[in-house]
Length: 340
Image (cartoon, rainbow, N blue to C red; front, side):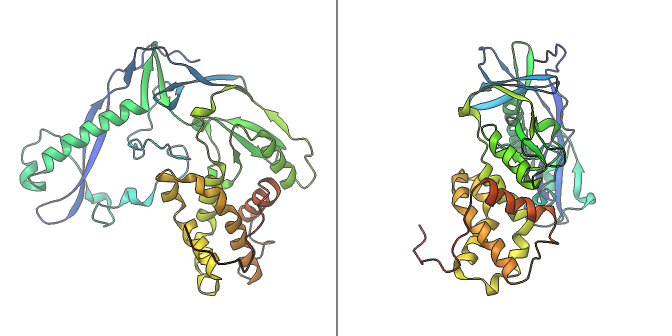
């Protein structure tokens, strides 16, 4: 476990609110706020212990969340996700920033000139940005402080950051499956190469299937020495659906007019998968996998997708569904039943 004795008690991060100025122009105010980690005095239980490539990593549990040791190297000023108790599936800065990040609360797209750096004590804020602007800035500052306190803690003199457990990363090119921690992730979930900690054999089966016989016994790099499953909230089925939507949501949308009704409903559900997960209904994803395969079969059957030319994303998704998850596609003409 890393021991960092000079972790800062306070650091500066910019909070934000969306407003309109006196000319009715949409803009985003950014202002510095002094934040700090939550100091925890009670001993914390180890909820995960992992060894990978010479690195030993112990996770602790606090208030139902998992935390890993950190050197407090914060991700710059980009803390768009810090308010969200549900951690993103991708490391900050490694994958993408959601498009809503660049839109004003009114829906207008923000440009570089729409960002204004101000201070909470600046004179004339109420006159220029509305009488409620100072109070809104104070509330935003308090919310940011609370969010930082949830994301970063110090216990027994050691700093920790809230983060997901490692995952098993399948590497078909090298014929290996290795543990990968989120901070050092080199492939986002949308590449369909990641598996939850309890699914090592499924990860190995994926490597063997993609390798087409080259890797009958993929090597394993890394060891899960201890795992408290109550702190492991990874949902592979949800991640598969999110990846399928990222790859294929628009492709399926072009076919919607000729789709059977049940596939139209499946496509609509797939487009909403991130919202479904965000409201705590990720368990629905398992039932969506047969529909995802049915959508793929339909796209191939009507000639929209040539699987031989579609690329690795299409191959990974079909292999993951059929050879690893054991999914059977929804029948082309299913019995109609009322939706729950």
